[in-house]
Length: 279
Image (cartoon, rainbow, N blue to C red; front, top):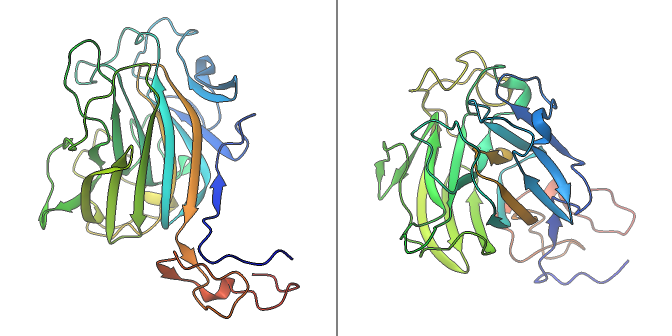
């Protein structure tokens, strides 16, 4: 067994560069893993969200869910917007727009015609020409968070990021500390911080009231401490070349073989003291 370096970060690649293994698809109006219009595909080592087999968008918001739930972690994605949006998106959908969601309910708990999973959405934006538009914005969906110590009630809240033009690759990270604090980071700069994500089902047209997060009916005000990671389809083509996760929860005993100094949440049931141990 190789010697453990407690300071070396062990990133997990959620996307293998070849296929959608370990991912589930949910598109509005369709059953789980009915990939209408080949919306989600892997080409040239990238996840591509495309609409070349659509005639119009028609409210078919789509979601690509990773099959595992996570709680304390850093998620990093590298994305770029390409091409033109498909016609027919609702007027309230911003141009050059997509998203990454976390602490989401599972695809199997969504209603067939449910527009969005209960989640916290990070809105990704690109700019055309001389537009000034931030990315990594906050859009709580059936949830509420605290921003500067107060509930954030707006549909979407702009971050402090600079503008990134369409077709440019951008690295966006989020630090998720369970149900305590979340940070949005774009190209190494922290652009938003907030706390205490909770269930708040205030938009009944978005959600199935009997299918809240992860097959369990949760009361409003329930703290969201874990959930699924989701890539969003919202009418503009987008590509992801990297999706990686650094788990921040694990063995915090310095005597263990798999101790890591960067863990912020203890789960010492994972500790290994002998090479034959199974965490």
